[in-house]
Length: 262
Image (cartoon, rainbow, N blue to C red; front, side, top):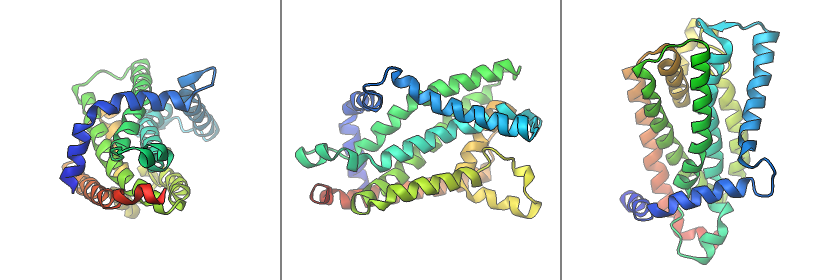
């Protein structure tokens, strides 16, 4: 079943690009600023956090890194994770016109939304690179490992997204619960705060947060030029691949019922 799902995505790969572009256009249809709105909200959030923590709480440096640079290097991957997972969870329900009227490969929708989110993510990564240059962070080959952590995120998001989007068809509460869950996840993941702020006995708990591995990974390779920890990598991939296989299995099993329920 899982192989059939992946084979279907491969066979319909020509749909991914046009549908991803259509998704981006539809989000900002009728607005004057268009896709620029995808940049306004994150920039506003970054500005608020900067004034609250760097100016208000005087958090000038975190782990020897200027606060704004430390925060943005973790916030950029979070934006991608948050937006992609939210869109994928609602993807089947929001595209009911495809599911009900045609023989449509609904499993492709997760990859379509993922591809659409890559465009603003590339823009924000470019902004991060510009900030690194501004703060005189020298180029290091380890920075290319950000692509590895992007791959980590994509596998994790698609698997989790398949699981949630299939359940969302039958239980519409899923998207509401996801919003609350993502807000909680934002604050329990060291995006704004440093793990050094936790008491020593609680820091080991952070390794069980797979998103924390990605956030810290972006910081390590982009700012600190550190390689990923092997033990943490093994744990992350065991979790990510488990979600990927479970999500693919659940989606494949429930897919034949989507048209009747929607």
